[in-house]
Image (cartoon, rainbow, N blue to C red; front, side, top):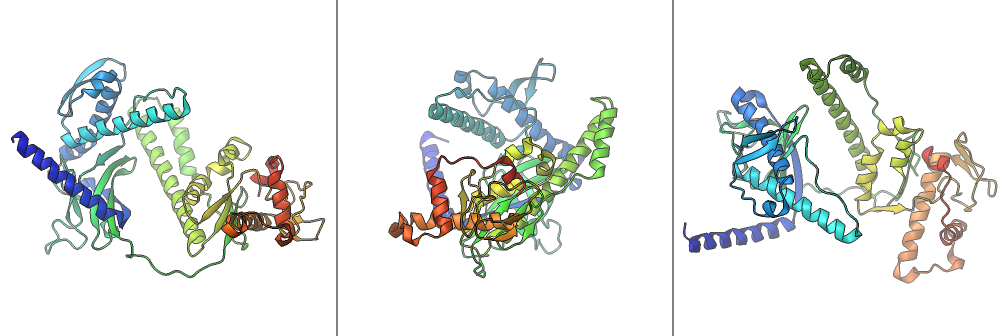
Length: 440
């Protein structure tokens, strides 16, 4: 190919890329998780698939160990590298994976270094450097039709020979997958990720569908306040309580005891360790499923949801570390914070001590008091439900004060709660007592 032909080809690729990005901007991305059925492959093909992850780790550690000038001059056509083994002895290795995998590893490392440099320039502090990896569990497949493609969809062909199969670059035989029925009809396929877990290898395929597809009109529900806690993990202002904790099974404890008795590095030790990893993966999946279900129940149909920026990490380090570890509070909090309809109140707002009617601060409330009784106005109610109602009122007050016509709410239009909330905001923002947040 001459230089003129190569430049012309690159221009065509650029124009197609711009058109694709413009089209995807008006569509909705959906990520479909599918598990590869490795039983349909031969031992050689299965080993080659797992070898891709090992070679990506070799290449990644090799690139991290290069000097900055050699890293910039690295050619993605390189096949011979030298990496260190577990005893830190240099070993010459030959890369057999597709060239696209080498390019994605190199480009991801360049992006990581740019992010480190940008953070260093922003903070003015030294952030260290990239660390060597002991495992490489995610391979980027960035070009549909080249690194991966679907042979036949859920319907398959008439004889069903290639039903629910995909192609991965470097593997000649089509691979059967489970979960292809999740792909929406008429979806446009895009990039994907090949993820290795203890339970197998998964393909995370990104699809694009029109925004109006799959959207259904939902019933409008009233605004909601939610309170995080330990005894009852989620409590709403409507009085509903959710338990999103999943405890460890006895099987996992037995496997951990068995691992402690085995010789480290033996075949049985590695086998038990893989079983423990699979148990932890099942636990993580169950907790994630619970968090997703509760998130859907809270968000669907609501224009405003108010929550507090609770210190979940601090709870985990305190007396309630085991309870927090068994729950999915951190996952749910992260999902709620990214939702545009969720308003987050300051961490130090005394939602447990403030009365939602008169705004009185009940400083004498203790850990054992599960019912809130206001000495000023006589209001009484469940401690957790009261805290959620107080957060909802604080969120509505924040929104009212930010409207153009009500940037400074007149005192005569304030309720007793609003006046108490404004007084607290103008104060030194004294932190709420530790017991009042972790037990609500």
